[in-house]
Length: 252
Image (tube, rainbow, N blue to C red):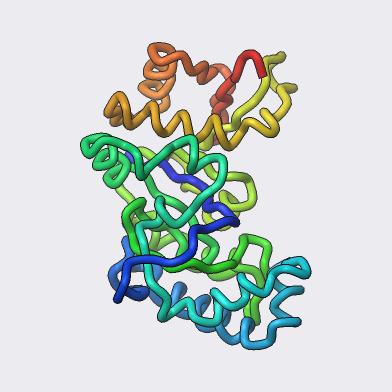
């Protein structure tokens, strides 16, 4: 079982003293060549700050993100789930988990990044700025990850629980029959439910924390539905269609 999260735009600065990015050491090595290309393009783009601001969709205060990109290959690294910050990652609380639950996250949680593709929770990465809709010399990151898709998913065993946002999901959709994309929605008639809205990220973080708390290892949609019923999460089996299922959040 692998739970995939979206990255956050905000990232913690710094890292472990004396460390730097090791692309070969990241999980799912079929992506290494694509990572190298994107990294090179990002560094080249960031050498031209004004052009980079436009391509990365940064505001007037985006200089610090560009500076990060300029030294991304040599700056210190930390585990991915310590690097990413924001509402989702605060709700998950990776750094505060007891050791057994953190070990579960390390085994079963990944992030799909525009720069690194699919990585594991404990993979060591630097601070950077690149989004799914950024523009590089070769186009958006999605063009690279589309080419990597077949070899990547051949490396990923078991059931995939996809909690990415639509933009990051589109970079490399989970192949049919390999897992399920979870749509967080408000209560309503099947087929007309509205997206959850501003509590979406916190709910995803809390969901992954609960999976870690219970040590869940789910291998089918039926097992996911049953686990949810036990733990207070309404995964609607009637909504399961074309690799997607509704998670209905009452009171939202």
